[in-house]
Image (cartoon, helix red, strand yellow):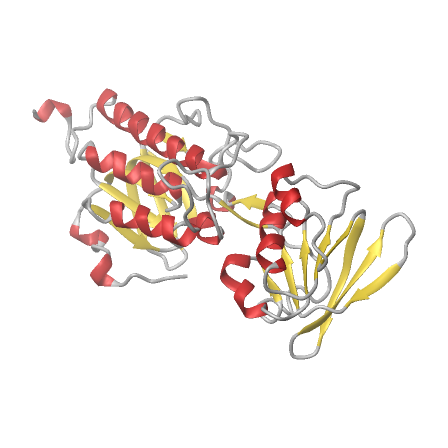
Length: 331
């Protein structure tokens, strides 16, 4: 987590009354929403735990228009640089609760700070799912990682395992296979879900071993990880993989707990939205991976952020709020 400090974020108290638009999250959706809203001269606050969200974890991006290749951190830096050109209150804080009263939305952070908005966009993204096995908590940060982009270089020359056979798992596998003598890929199901183009990149690699229909039983070690016990689901046979790193890539959980039931969620814990990013609650919109939109891509999240901001602007105009505060009757 990064605390930008007073020099990089104007204090909320400097702007009395609610903001025109309150944005929760600063991934591609939240930052794009901020830029579009600021261009409409809305008074905007973005409350976020970090900058970039999942994009920061991507080692290489080849499908964002304008860049044949760019790393996740580099693209996030470009987004943030663009965002900083606008008069937006970008504040650090994790939302602990969120409510609506008398048409005003209020987010309260874990630190107890309050931020109000006449309209709001939830763009809080998702967080990694945990394995839930013995040793995972104990060795988090001591061999267990959820961010290959952040941590892969630390495991150069060491044997490691990746848990999860989807696109994110193969992304981690590709990174690690280039720097590690042995990489195991553990997949719970009987087949792999990653795109064929990703699977082709590691096909035939001598240092990669793929274990299908296999579950993780336990992560062991002393000061650091030195073994991951796995079990073949068909035979029940167990083996201890001699690894010093375990990269967990089994999916993501929407960051919606702080909503406290304000918004109905779907079976995956996501916020259902229509094509205009509307949630069904007047003035409340959602964008990015936290929503029910099926394809979770950077460019789609950014597009949703733009849509949500424009619809929020339209909502404010239709409900009589003057841009920058006040009411239309004051014009």
